[in-house]
Length: 355
Image 1 (cartoon, rainbow, N blue to C red):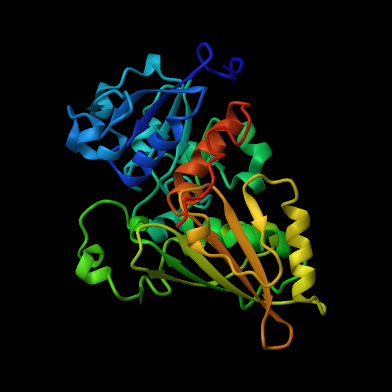
Image 2 (image 1 turned 180 degrees about the horizontal axis):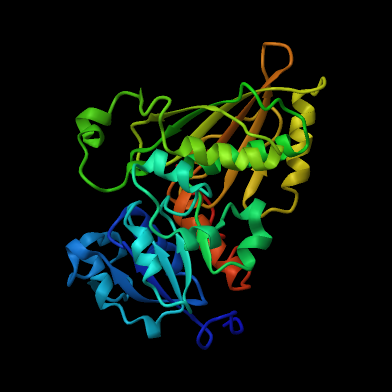
């Protein structure tokens, strides 16, 4: 057993997962089950309160876990860290009401946008925990590691923004691509929409086809732009279009950029290799190889490829992640590890599932 982690009781961090009956909640349980420093002490799922989690997710039947309860029934004095896997709009009040001693990793969108007016514009209501929003650290781990380490509240990034920002931030920071004209074309598995019943996610609606949705109006657009603007030192507007794919999990983002000052695809690739040298989860794949969602499935890994475009002065970036792991619960555990001073790869070193 590893030594005592920062801000924990004994040798194990006592974990509460709020919203454990959703896909990201179940994925948190799956990952934390093999974490030597974590002990799950509370699971909430209001609609399923009183049930064993195995009744909701039979694939977790072998684990010894507490039954699902309502949030108001959690005993916070026995908890060190909280994962909030609740729908956006509901998390603000919940986190605002938590005891101040708790560390929090929020998987919703409630604390990702720093501009309160921007949040209200995209989410349709004023932010209800502005002081906490100021405190929250955006948890794109490879980019924000130092800030995450010192944070009490981490806003875990969205799945699409993770797949878009990791390839683009180093290139913008190095001045290798133009800020204007960036196009992010993303495809996601159906689990990205959550577990609630929605007509568009029914099997006959999603199978054997692909369709764009929220064209020009997806809420992850401003989140992507926020991170890219910080890297570039100036406002950036991207063209971002998500698509629903007939698969359970995975995101593939194809990103089109204009190179700056005569930079070639090889220069972009070299920049990414420098930025992510030694990173345990980000791989710039060999030249000519195209990332695929099946090569990162079930893992916290990120595969990035760089290609010259046919048009002079342009390049294509391709990024593959698992939307439920690096795009949500895996990155959340990665952030927890950083917050607690634990080895960053703890419980996340499993290889992708293939085929």
